[in-house]
Length: 113
Image (cartoon, one colour):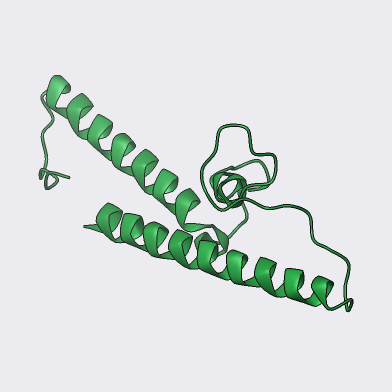
């Protein structure tokens, strides 16, 4: 249930990000056409293999853990990072249960995920 909720949040967040990024790009383009601002860098809003400035590159960046340290609060993580944390935690919990079963020390079982 937790992973499903996180996946739904990721999908909604990504869709909203794409809409907001496209609206901001078009707004900057209109301002540039009116001579009020410089033209923005070309930006693509479809997943193309050779695009150098795609909104999808931003979304992939949200999954990275390079700038995350141990003292961060989980609320500071992106939804993509939260999904990875949950997957790691569930994998560790499942591994712990399997090890206990192998050792014969079976306590209360965890519900299936």
